[in-house]
Length: 88
Image 1 (cartoon, rainbow, N blue to C red):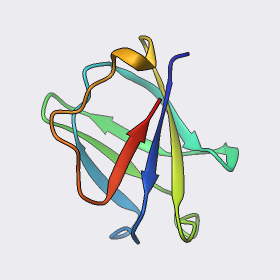
Image 2: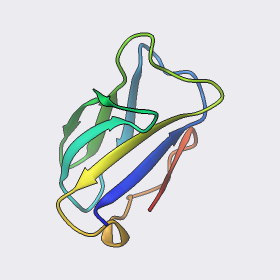
Image 3: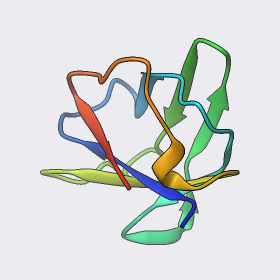
Image 4: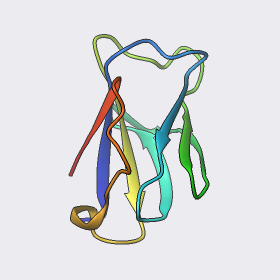
């Protein structure tokens, strides 16, 4: 499929997270536990910025589903961040 999952293991600063950019274009983003809740994203050559809506960060983990324009297995991060990881 074309979906990868970002697992947030810590509280976010205002619901915002910045990751190294991935090699695929992000088409859409939503919370895994409630697909009707979109997660705002901005993708630049250097970074992928995600913003979880206020009050929607879950404990102990928030999972964001990212739909890509290519197969998930082809997505790569420049370097894994400390407070999140991606699974396909």
